[in-house]
Length: 111
Image (cartoon, rainbow, N blue to C red):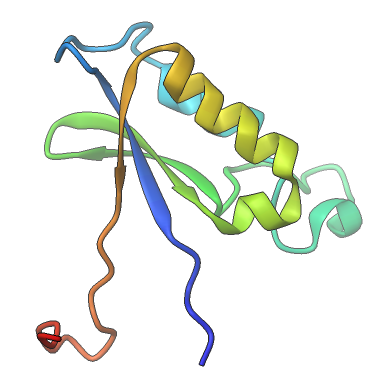
């Protein structure tokens, strides 16, 4: 049984609870990671990298701007993973590991 890669939410809140600026930080960070995707640069073509990578996606969650980072990025390009996680650390942003829910919708089983 293989485990799914973990996901992490980099929140646009500092550890002190302040909103991180500039307001488009999430889109900029995810845009910088847009080329890291399944198939990599093999896709080619003029519009090959329009859009965000599925491994680094900006979202607003409960009114807080976030970037969802999939740990699979580490396997594709460790330096890209380090860049994203160091960005969060260097800017004092809150990073939370996402909890995974069972795919069948059933509540998690107790150990």
